[in-house]
Length: 207
Ligand SMILES: Nc1ncnc2c1ncn2[C@@H]1O[C@H](COP(=O)(O)OP(=O)(O)OP(=O)(O)O)[C@@H](O)[C@H]1O
Image (cartoon, rainbow, N blue to C red; front, side):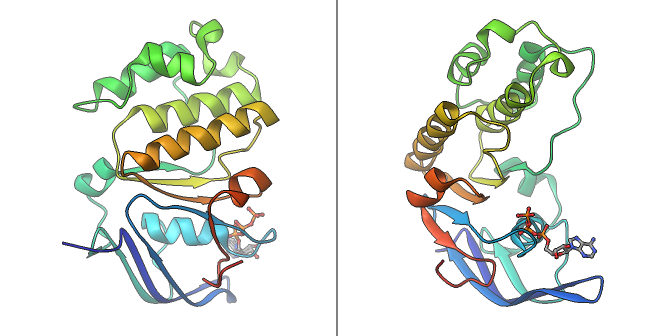
C-alpha cells in the first residue's frame, strides 16, 4: 500500500550540463490536483517527464503508486499522459479517435457521445483532427485523456490553445476527476487553474 501517489525525494536533474531541478521533494496524495508553476524554462515539463519515466533524473528517488517507476503496461494502464500534441491517425475522425481509446480500455469514464458533448466536439465529430482548430484539437486530446480510466493524469499545459470559457470548463472537469479519486499533476500558466489548486514550483517549494 502507499500513502502518496507520487513521492519524490531529492530529485536532481541536469540537462545538457545545466542544473534544471535541484534536490526537489514532492508528495502528492490521492485525489489531489497539483499545479506546477514557474517561469519558462524553470523545469515544469522536466518534472512531469521524470514522473512519467521519460527522463531518468540525475539523482534522487521517484516513487509512483508506491513503487520505483517501471515502464510497463500496468503503469501506463493507470496513468494518462498529455505532453505535446499527440500523433493523430490522419484518416480517423474525432469520433473514431475516441472510439479507439474506448476500445483499448476495458471500461471508460464516460461514453464517446458524452465525451463529445463534454468537450464541445459534437459538431466536429466527423472531422479529421487535421481539419480542427488548435483549440479543438487540444479539446480532443483532453477528451481522450479523460475518457479512459486512470488513477493519475500528468498534463503539460492542458490550457494550451483553449479559450477562456473552456479553460474554466476544464477546471471543472479536472475537479470532477479528482472527486472520483483521480490525481492530477499539471504544468500550467493558467491563472484560473493555478488559483484553485495546490501550487508547487519545480523546486518543490510552495509557490
Ligand atoms: N534536452 C535538453 N537538453 C538540454 N537542456 C534542456 C533539454 N530540455 C530542456 N532543457 C532545458 O531545461 C530547462 C527546463 O526546461 P523545461 O521544458 O522543463 O521548462 P518548463 O518550465 O516546462 O518551461 P515552459 O514554461 O517554457 O514550458 C530549460 O532551461 C530548457 O532549456
